[in-house]
Image: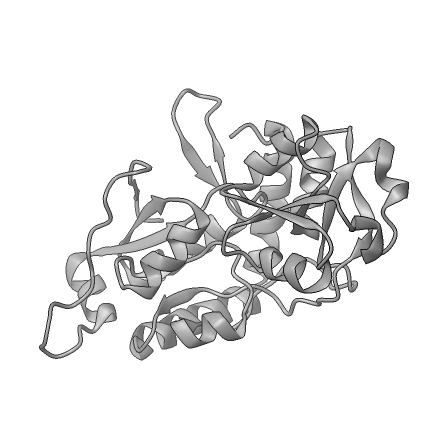
Length: 274
């Protein structure tokens, strides 16, 4: 039976799990098991990976990666405590050791490998070479065929996300608008404040299901994902080994694909109400 999930209110101060000054570095895996709680940071604006359901008047966190976090906690024999925050804050929280793990649509990048411990890959969607693209207004979609077509256009990308780097590197003539959340980008796109929003293809397709005025542009970034990763604080090798063991079990059993399919249905049913 799955352990209960302790949902931390968004915006509350993070409980510091980092060791104090000067002594032996804390073994987070031991601490997690002693306390009986796994603290996970996430940015719940990235359906179907992680998103919110507020339809009952109460905030519930859903998504394939939320289910992965639950499963990791369950396999460790502890409760899961979710800390919801902006995406850039997620990276800061795990880099500084203020949370135990971070699951938030993380792609493996050299910068993240330098600052965090990254797990084995997991993925559900098939790779077709269209992993990262741009949401645009459907009525203007045929105007965006190449990188050059975005010259002078305002392109929104989430602060600290892979998409921000892709826009900077592959659309150098675009005007990048840094956003806090994908939802902010969608609002800016539908109201004409930006011309495109850089997103993972799976996320973009979810939005097009619920926003008929939007479409994915024919242009896609040159990037092919091997999957996503869980992040832990750098140097927490025992915790990372345990997370990897659980991820391997998840993939062997086909659980992530099940969670992914359920999350897609849930996101579509909600119309991405967040």
